[in-house]
Amino acid sequence: MNRRDFLAAGAALAGSMMLPSAFGATRQRVRLGMIGTGMRGQVLLQELLRRDDVEVAALCDIEPIMLGKALKQVEKFNKPKPKTYGEDRDQQAYKRMLDAGGLDGVIIATPWEWHAPMAIAAMQAKIPVGCEVVAGVTLQDHWDVLNTQLKTQTPYMLLENVCFRRDVMAALQMVRAGVFGELVHLQGGYQHDLRAVKFNNGDPAKPYGSGIEYGAKGWSEARWRTQHSVQRNGELYPSHGIGPCAMYTNINRGNRFTRINAFATKARGLHDYIIKQGGANHPSAKTTFKLGDVVTTTLACENGETIILQHDTSLPRPYSLGFRVQGTDGLWMDVNNGIHIEGKSKPHEWDDFKVWQDKYDHPLWKKYAKNAEGAGHGGMDFFVIHAFVEALKAQAPMPIDIYDAVTWSAITPLSEQSIAQNFQTLDFPDFTAGQWKTRKPIFAFDDRY
Image (spheres, one colour):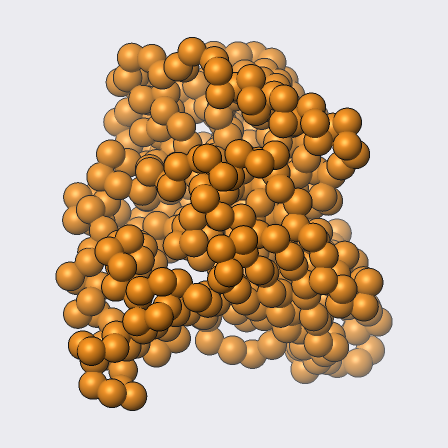
């Protein structure tokens, strides 16, 4: 971003701080559209359809099979059939949906490279956005999304569901209560064997682990996500790990990231998977993958904390986000579900976190646990959709707002830059233009949402 754009962003933010309150009377019901009705979109669509305060008014997807499955979901819930766009495979069909108007918000659940242009188009149409992670691909994408939001003042929320995980939210309560003392170091990441997600045989009925095709011959995420592993080397999926860590450390609300660097290992896992599944003569075996099997990113914070993220999706391993919250009085680690608090735990021994989690269970989970039963990702998908819908209804600030979105997501292009420049440490952009100093700690993760 050049200096002129940066100053313009700061001026827009300052102006927005002086605007009259945009809060209006609480709506009882909202009309929503959805762009992208693939595997992820259908999970989110289910959460919308479960709600009596949401009308799914429009659906857009350029894959007729997925659009058809989404319509069957609507029918199963006995809801009115929404207007559909994209049956003609026109990649600009989403613009027709936005131009039609009549929407109180739109959910974007498409491949990553479409998130920024679709969110920008929606905000320019004054339609609030709930965008799946990530916010953009390039660093300029993030500035463009931010500047559009500041200019249009259209609400934007990043739909990061891990911020609503039950143990993560209990740990947030503990941080707020000072259980860990002063925070010093945090860790998180995306450690998830995605080999069977990045490859399949192209059969829509077998999206996971059915083969070793990708790109045009693949289906679902294998059709688009794998190409990012071919072309890019960096922390490609930061928000699951950094979202909770940013909440704990009040990033953009009295604290900020100041420096970042990243390191990547050699790339072996995806190639080895192809060889094991299909042999050395399969066409996919000729692919050279750029993404290191394990990417480690380090962030420094203004208030003195450090945060480590690890992206590990190409090797055999159980799923883990690897959370660690460590302070002057103790720490929590999710890998062993353990916690140690000095003076309360036995010296050099772990306590079972479940006891502490029950004690510090977040008000949201106490209030809505029953509603979340059966929702995707252990209930987290209920909460992230619930937060977006309730904020829309109340015409209130989004709990994961535009600054969170671009700050967390920009870790990807910055990590790519660091690795490409021989693991250089880089300055982290201040997307708030200095307003992080006066913005208040995050408020929305309480029983109002």
